Length: 120
Image (cartoon, rainbow, N blue to C red; front, side, top):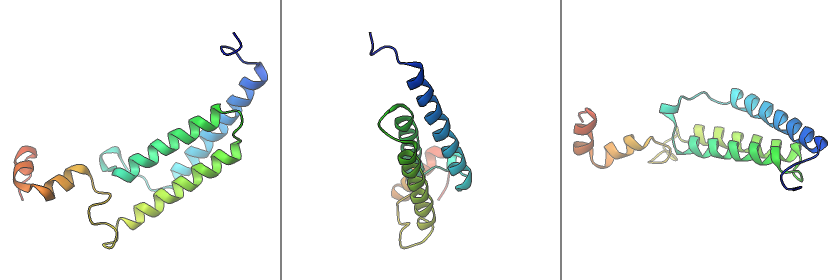
């Protein structure tokens, strides 16, 4: 039954790491560019999944230190910021980072525009 329960020291350690990772994620996300869900692109979804995975893994894996998780989290947030800036430049922005409906409008403007009420 040891796989079902843990010692109070281990649970306290996990709670402490989870709290630190949550605080690190909140601070990192507050420092990054604000975007609403409707404006998210592929790189925003990738960053959200990476942040969730890093925070969750660091909180529950006993052999991973808070410092390792914090560095991984901050590196992902920094890379996300760089990608957000890079997608504004013509040399990078072709069809990467656009919302799916914007790409669809470029590929088949007539059919999609009629369906969503946008006229080209």
